[in-house]
Image 1 (cartoon, helix red, strand yellow):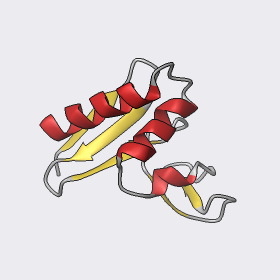
Image 2 (cartoon, one colour):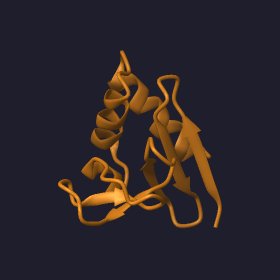
Image 3 (cartoon, rainbow, N blue to C red):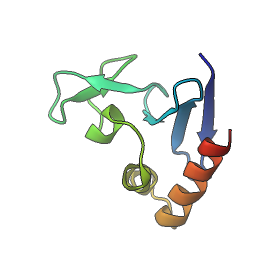
Image 4 (tube, rainbow, N blue to C red):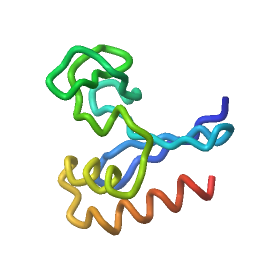
Length: 91
């Protein structure tokens, strides 16, 4: 398994498994992926099981990247999401 990570200037964290071509967001609490669990969003942190936003439980796309960086109060979420996806795909 080859995992590439990226941290944006606003602190949003992303990861990409280059072997299977899957990119995803990382939680703020433990910098882990999300998984289905008992929480209001239906998703918990894979490490500490704290409730996290639902976008942590699905594969990454542009809309999810925008939501993730916007949650970190990124001043330019659309541009940041575009750049992040390009970086992850180029890795």
